[in-house]
Image (cartoon, rainbow, N blue to C red):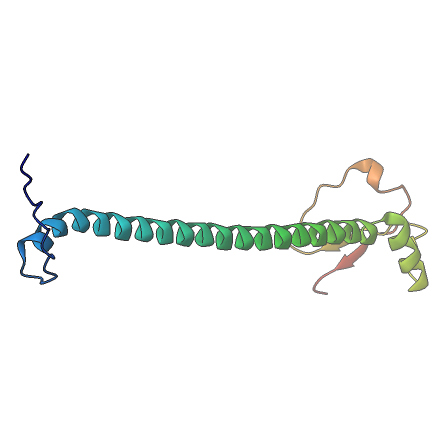
Length: 133
């Protein structure tokens, strides 16, 4: 049996110009492109999430402001109803010295004719005329 020596592999050149390095570059390029695309997509998703959260906070602030304004609206509505209460108005008028007249006196103004129903003026009421003498 004769034996032959196994050829010892030569050290590969790390030169950029060597054919071995050029063969590996095409395999690395798609991996680098894919990694960059994945990183960009990750940052885009993070930015979209931050934007959505920011909009959610703004929406919550606006809803809170709407609730406050609605409460203010209803408080003002209650206050207006209290101010229109006939009992309160009557009491305030009496404090100012206003009273219901004992008898009604219609006022006639020259040039203005108003048809007054007969039941509105009691018989015997005096009529006052306002106008030129």
